[in-house]
Amino acid sequence: MPSALLTDLYELTMAAGYVAAGKHTERATFELFLRRLPRNRKFAIAAGLPQAVEYLLNLRFTGEEIDYLRRLPRLAHARPEFWEILRDFRFTGDVWAVPEGTVLFAGEPFLTLRAPIIEAQIPETFLLATISFQTMIASKAARIVDAACGRSVVEFGTRRAHSPEAGVLAARASYIGGCLGTSNVEAGFRYGIPVYGTAAHSWVQAFDNELESFRCLQSLLGESTVYLVDTYDPVEGTKKAASLGSPLWGVRLDSGNLVELSREARRILDQAGLKDAKIMVSGDLNEYKILEMMAAGLPIDALGVGTDLATSADAPNMSAVYKLVEREVGGKKRFAAKFSEDKQTLPGAKQIFRFPDRDLVGYVTECPTCDEEGAPQPDPLLRPVIVGGVQVGALPDAHTAREHARENLSRLPKVIRSLYDEEHSYRVEYSAELWRLYEDLLEQYEGQPS
Image 1: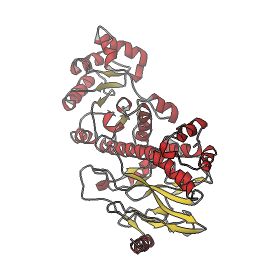
Image 2: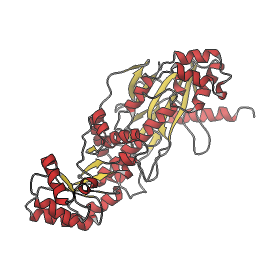
Image 3: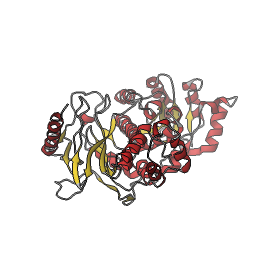
């Protein structure tokens, strides 16, 4: 489990400050959302909720961790009761979230968290890290899978990921985004994701004879055999693979001119009577290269995508934020917003609705209790996940999240899924009530004495 210290120091200095100010029992509501979509993105696929929930339900400070915090100069003046609160720390609040795999747009909350303010503040760093990263990768995967036009895509990126754990979570997020599976065995074990892989170039190099390496691989893997044919000469390698006949799945090309080589490989396999043998390509692929391959009508059946997918290389971060939107003081609600240029936030807990018959994707309305009572149709997207510190039901697994993402994406117009059309985007509308709350708060702020 992640340590409670996996947070930014200022979360803890604020927590100590809330205790010193007597505010730590005030209930606060925070929302996690994308301030804006990354470059070249028109939508995001929500991912990372199970890790967020697991973290909140198991958030504890050990004695050793508290002793460490006591030695930090920034916390030298923390009140004694702060340390007692940390010793007994548990998350007792509520969380509402969209289901994993939901298509989201800028300004729509991924989750809403309501709890005593100290419990709501400390999780900020971890929640942003796990949700924004997995959402980023799931969104990238959806673009790649869409570009593949029905060909299978396997995630190959762990060795290029920013850490081993990032590789596991990237594999999970890629699967939710539509990949067929992953090369990461740990991800397969943890999440039940299909795993794929046969042999690397080192396998061929470990034999004195390329054909002998292929023969041994076929003996081991049978109908699952995929020959990596480009260690020396891809055309000759394909001929050697074809000479062994069945059983095999096919061949993989990992370098060179994939346009010419894939066509030549198809010709060789067909001439050998292996018309059912498949061709997989890999090697520094991304959605743009894949789309060009598909437009050229190449005889490719599957694609392995690594670096560009596991790091979302063209858009390697998301502007996810976690903002206070309201708090409860003495039984009265007090709204919160930011007014700074380019970073404004709207006050009040919100709910998301989709109206397919309108010229917009999202309708975000003020929903102080985040419940469904009186909500317009269709059903609201934010749903209870944790209530009173207790999980509400089981979360859908990665397979269910993947199917939910597929259904969501199928409803998006082609122009929104396009890699090139930058003129069209979906709008997210906010209710008149939200804007009134914002204007009222702005007026109050501007009326304060300087």
